[in-house]
Image 1 (tube, rainbow, N blue to C red):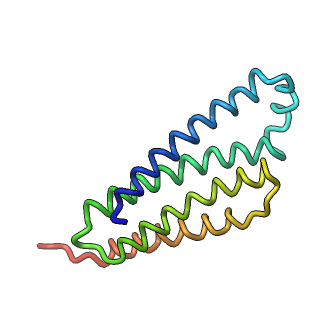
Image 2 (image 1 turned 135 degrees about the horizontal axis):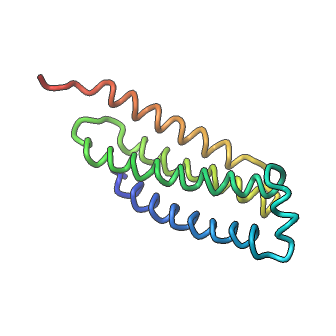
Length: 135
């Protein structure tokens, strides 16, 4: 795990959540109960589904960025594998939201993913702060 996997998974997850966006468009504009769906814009499953869509793409983009940075600065950064794995575990957050919406599961995956992504971003930020610049 040196960042390449983050880029690959990030792009695949982003594509998946983009496709999921088409489902949301269908539910809003074409489904038999589209009026009820649109009226529940800020509540219930509609809100949760949009939350998953947004966070899925955000966390995918973060994985792409983190992967790029880990690859580009691999000779200057420490703990690349741990940061990479934590960022990948971050994808559990939007997957957890979907599992709540469609399977009624508790928010365990949401918490694990959110904590993992937050730790990976903070750890990478601190790692960059510690890089010695050449003058």
